[in-house]
Amino acid sequence: MTKDIIETGWNFDNSYARLSKSFFTSHNPTPVRSPKLVILNDPLATTLGLNVEELQSEEGVAMLAGNQIPEGASPLAQAYAGHQFGHFTMLGDGRAILIGEQITPLGERVDIQLKGSGRTPYSRGGDGRATLGPMLREYIISEAMHALGIPTTRSLAVVTTGESVIRETNLPGAILTRVASSHLRVGTFQYVAKWGTAQELQILADYTLNRHFPDIEANEGRYLSLLQEVIKRQALLITKWQLVGFIHGVMNTDNMAISGETIDYGPCAFMDIYDPATVFSSIDIQGRYAYGNQPSIAVWNLARFAETLLPLLHEDQEQAVRLAQDEISKFTELYHRNWLMGMRAKLGIFNEELEDDSLIKDLLSMMQKYRVDYTNTFLAFTFERHEDTILSGTPEFAQWHELWRARLERQAESKAFVSQLMQDSNPAVIPRNQLVEAALEAAVEQGDYSVMERLLDVLSKPYAHSPEQADYSTPPAPSSRPYRTFCGT
Image (spheres, rainbow, N blue to C red):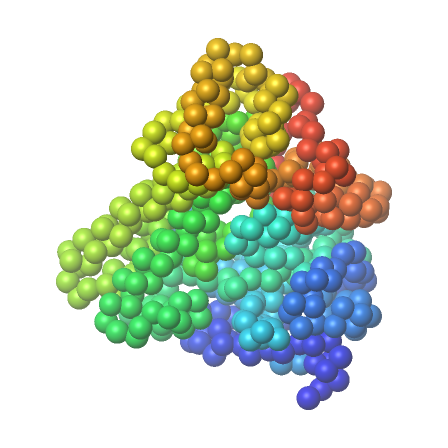
């Protein structure tokens, strides 16, 4: 065993690299001039079995920058396609390199990917680089999502490159080390279904089953089971997004992970004022990926996934289509069931009653009408500070509140249990857009990472409901200019 493996802790076993070369292109990162570590996720590194001290060394930083390839790594760029805003196109890792698959001390397999690591055969004319702001944004948001209990890729480190990246202006370059259960996407299947062979499609499906769904039996119905399980995971994931007001911003099929993790944090943001039509992304002109549309877009994406599996579902095309349609049609019910359960928990409700759906929707309708803050409204309910909300004093709320209190009284759980359920279901803090922007500005413009570090610390315990979180829960001041996010490519 070589020195860098022993000291740094890399433990690679690269199963994807053993697949057909039509799925990827072996490719090394492009070295950078002067890499410098700006943030390292110590707890995640330890979980991965990596040596935190060695990762901060010159050799360790060189690996995080792509200047040095760890022993046992097998760098590659993955091929995939995707529907981007409804339009199908050939894609692939245009600025990312999968270094390898780390086997953790617990025996888990995770992808280690460098994002912003230079041109690949799939760059389509791009420079393959990334800028510091968007890489730090992904670090902040992905780690906040993890703390909120939402399945997500995670961020191990960000290094600056010592090089400028030209966008509208010259910006500091950076590379993010991303950790994922895998980078298999709906778009991966679309690529193979379009340009691969039937045998390659089956190989990809079997690989996915072995990696993410090992409990599914290897029988003739396993591909239908694969579709069912992916639908279940996406129904749960989108539910969790909706419950905390997260807006992905670019739900293209290449950004839907088969594992059920949130992936690719481009123009993402969290909703302040409750409004299903909320859109932050500067490129989503039509609101295709608005907050309220996310469940229906998930169905659309899953239908595209199901189409790729048709040759594996049944030898008869019509029967395959019927099988796929039957499963896709179940998403809405699965999602709604998950959503109702989550919303009940946010309101302290333990059991089920038929009227719960209307009780919840009436509240959301009021919240939209009076333009109240989504997160803080549920916090006010959690700690019985209803008078702190704009809703207080309105006739609609008085009537609704009476119904809600009566609903709680009809369940057996004590007031203390209700309070605990609500505290566990309603975060005290989310990555408020103005706080994220302040952290990024301090880091990028001033080289001051302390603002981001303090924000990350607060976001790491969203359900603590501690006094120091109060300063991070204030909504942004009213503005005549809507908040906008950008892909950062």
